[in-house]
Image (tube, rainbow, N blue to C red; front, side, top):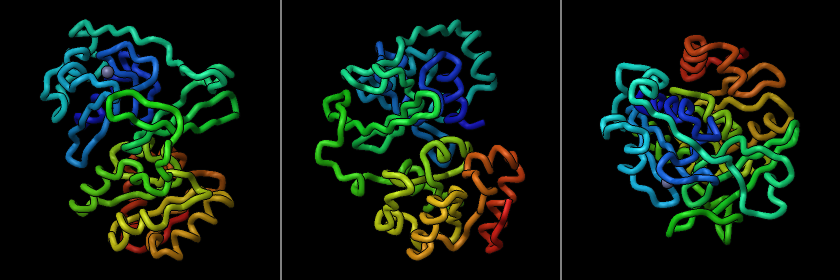
Length: 276
Ligand SMILES: [Zn+2]
């Protein structure tokens, strides 16, 4: 377990929502609109940044953690740790300030994904899904909309981590949704802002082109295969790991389990194409 996986576990245990995304409720202030960006790095360390302005020290104090927790996990599980230090936090319900917002129509915030100058909120209501962009304000907080930021100008999802992984020669997985990236725990994975319909080939090529251990795991559906074709024509899909029909990278990871998934990625990197 890395410091990053331990800390995300602790945030789950104390109830910082929504679980799963890279932005959660900050434990150091009354956070109704998730403001805490949690980033993991290839060496297992992490950073904690509150868009509302809390310092890393504030956040660690609220979690009763020392600074060491940014670098190494303690020898106890997050739930045991929370019990041992008597950590009980009370997070307010997640809401949205806006009239006509998804929250006012019964949607629940499913995940928030950090794209640097902007965040992507994913709301869900039964089978329905809504995606909302918000701009991160330099003075703290966020406001709805992209305000002149072009989606194509945004960095790749978790781009800074992926750049470090590339520098270290680690495999990087290119998938077709933020939720797949977040599900691939222990891997350096990325996607682009805007979804399968608008593949940001320029940005992908600028960051990822020529990396020998780049493995594309497309969604195995018509939109995903169309997207794969675009990646292929841009020279970004030399190694492809294809999930079963109807499945995506997350399904493949959960279906195979950690070890067999790692084997499949290794085989894909060495040139064999894999149908799982
Ligand atoms: Zn905060």
